[in-house]
Length: 216
Image (cartoon, rainbow, N blue to C red; front, side, top):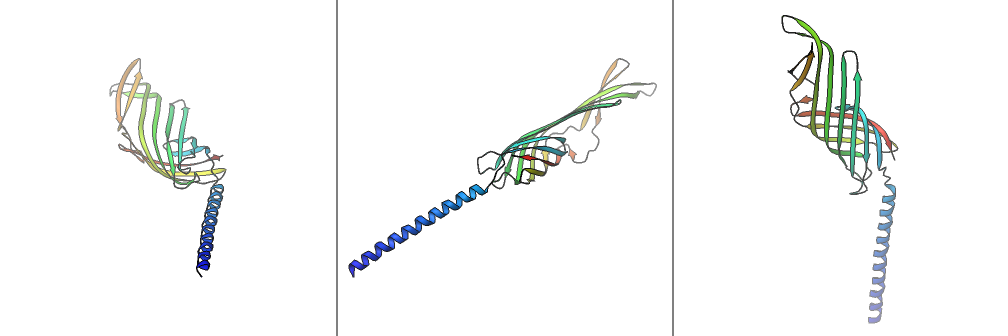
């Protein structure tokens, strides 16, 4: 009976260790299958439209760290618009990182970034009057500000992606616009209050963009 009991315990121990080893192997196989099932496109190139960037290009790199959750990005918009009465130079630059909630580099994310907004305007053939006589001339101004941006967004997966984000840019927005006017060879400077602009205040600006692009 003693020999039988000892053999029983040896047999039970072998079965126990075999079961544990088999379970560990199954768990490792499942982890490998799960990792293989997560297809991550690390590079995203696209176009963004909205406020305050208007329209421009966007680039993002999903880093293979922290479960593919960190993605540095850069957005840029810039164009010139010239007419007989107005010349506009616009530039918007934003850079930062998106933090994704999942391990696929898509879905919901929080965006943190810094942005620089620069606009130069030149008005031609303006009428100036001092109450006694009037003359025509030109006037130019620059409206610039920087913000720290906090956004919440979502990006679809696949080779062709769509993108949507909303947030707020915190910054010190000027409440006046400084002009430099030139008429009859005389140059003068003056300021005007910034007209009401939806989404813009002295403390920052609302952000809302949509976009699409290619992931690879």
